[in-house]
Length: 639
Image 1 (tube, rainbow, N blue to C red):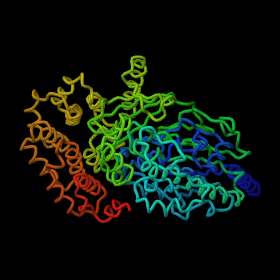
Image 2: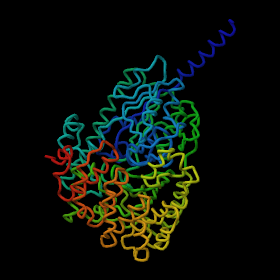
Image 3: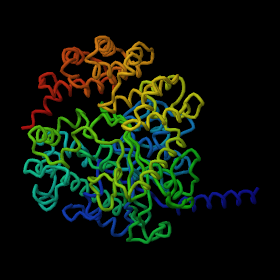
């Protein structure tokens, strides 16, 4: 017995020592920020001393990218280590289930003796959000932190800072920003309206500078609060035992940034800091920068790898540090799907220097209508300057109909993504190669987001989108081949041919292709489009009716169908109708009475609120500001 006793004591001591030698890991996540606005990334106007010091003593990652340009779609990938195209979580704040086999990655740490805490944002874009929270965190609240762990427990703690969020940088009234951001800064921490360079795609006026200074001051306040957190870590005597990650959850919350499709919404600042005892865990020299490609699905497996835990095989990312580090990838991939009420399916690929983007719904302008952004000072000013003819060709480009469905940018020489190289003769080979790699990735991932949102929702009542995409029922190749034709004016015959398919989702993308080309002659398929208005698949019915309304002299059958569908109890049907009305010529004006009736409806449902936003934005843009609900009235009164 005594021998066995000593063996057990020895085993327990080994486990204890192993845990004691594990590094703590602190994640500092901030909202809505691009590297262009951080001092250590070359911006001499920024006031970010704490982040700059962290970069100076750590490693600055220069090619880190969010998988999506909006928070919930990005965070669903962060918490699972799986790209949202596989999960079905690409649409902002969607509510579809995940397989039980996919877990929040901190649960693997928690089950191996780590203390895990989250302060405080979750926003995981799935109906399984409560499960992920419960299994991942000992505590997830605005009081959570490492200080509640058991004695000698290694910790993984996240702190989410909202001071740089879009609500601060643009959407909430200036008075609110002044109280919540500007007045909390000392004079030396403030950035005045003339102390920075304006991004070239904005009209450089005193009014725009007043609005844009909000970005710099919001980041300055964020940096100040990060400094206070790091000071607490030092006071608790934990700085020498803790690896620190800093990153933003996606790009800057300004037009062409957050929610954008071809602008700066993906690239993020990311810094990793190592205490002396754990510097050997860094693959790069301390005080240096690395141009390895990092995507958000890499974060989960990397933290597990640093903890000595082998990442589960379902994760799509690679560990870029730790015991299970894998070599860098040649390319990484990003996606943009529906954000609030604004449609738009976009896929991008980058090798770090060049980024290729395919816009699958080029009928929508880059700066789409979106109530949350449209009530802001900066967007209202941009739209007014456009109406006044005050913008140059670069500045108005985001507001006018797209000229192409393909974009290729050299991010090294063109960080603001102004010069599209997709038509450049010397880039033909690169364009074809990156297009092919993107196509192959979508097929390999079995990206389920190429189904209409109505369909994903219907699937979710029986199975998960993740599992459905792997079944034979999902003929992605046929769907994708049709989708890639959108915006391709020289492939009209193939676009129209898709209407004959027996696969309703191929027909859907054929109609989307027709809609994407305003000058496409549809006379030869006129009768087919009319017939499709009578089909029993709502996504096809809506598109057919929208095309008939917009391109067939306001077809009466189409009008009746759209009015009827607008009254549907399914908010995803209603939202698709509203999106199509919004971008049809004279659509908002023609359906003005229906929109007024619609906003009188009351329903406590997030999808319905997106519908309400679309209807209200159309009425607002027609001068019907008195019909905005009370909160929006307060936001619009920006005195």
